[in-house]
Length: 241
Image (cartoon, rainbow, N blue to C red):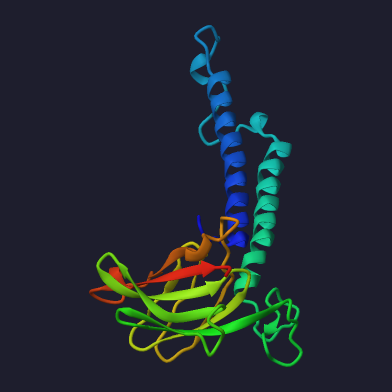
């Protein structure tokens, strides 16, 4: 991934790890019991080795410790994964007026920390096009003046500086859209008549951030919005120049 959200990468990897652990344990347990606990032809009563009687619970097979284990352990794991997931959710829904959030206050406002602040930009969706507004930010921080050919179609280019935080204030002029920053790991709906927001923290994979050209990803729409929904795209370029 040339541009990625470190927060969501960590969450994804954490879930993959626990999926492998739980899945591996479950299938090994299943294979072990399927092979070991089997009736044998040499058993005196191999047709009903457990002595099961219709309508009667086989109390002799009851194991309270095992039942508690397979109830409590998954419950604790679910609690832990829920807690762990709050990190990315809190970052996505952080208040732009909270100076203690990861993003601080808007750069240039009273009381902001120059080492921890964000830039506000605008994104407007319409059938089937994206419009960007950098709000008079310096061109080295945000620029939306260029267009680029993408599979035969000219699409807008949004250039963002690596290491900066951006708050995208978004709306739609016609129907519901859903801008998806493919390699940032974030998306949010835009609804006509309503304003939504999305935090963006662009990063690069390579040390030089793609050099003079920067590293690029796509901005797509993930909410069906009409005939050309599949072609509603823009290019997001991240640089450190």
